[in-house]
Image 1 (cartoon, rainbow, N blue to C red):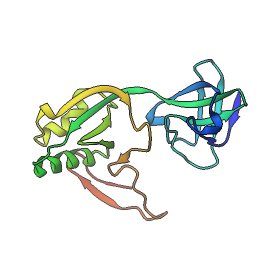
Image 2: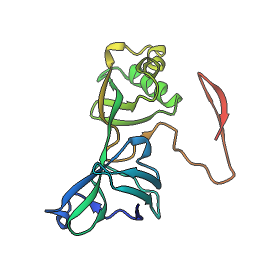
Image 3: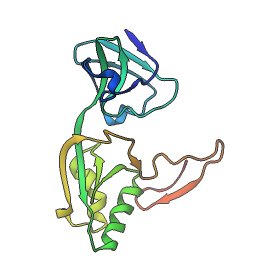
Length: 178
């Protein structure tokens, strides 16, 4: 097993020009992990143990032996794409509330919010529909989620000082502590 401990750069950096590329397929759910075990597309077994947490974006170079580079490639996965209304702030608010209430990781792409489907499309869309969002604004497709940067986690990644949790309420689940 090849153990790797740092990110070397991006595949498009000049210093990697002309190198063969061996891809490591990484899902969005694993892209923020500091430790990861993965097999490359050619079967190279990789143990990743980064010194600091970093986002494994598409094109991240993890190894260079002078001939080939090991490059992160983000897996396409099912996502829900929600089109934001241009002149309807109430609907935009309902969309934000429905996604934020579930702490749904999301990314904004122009006038769209993209979220991973972790259950079924029906369950992913349910909170939006319950808040009165028109089903015509919701579609599902395959794409690499958060391929370039960590998602904006609608409340999922907010931090609190050590030992100082807070309690907040959710429409669908009641109160819970972080």
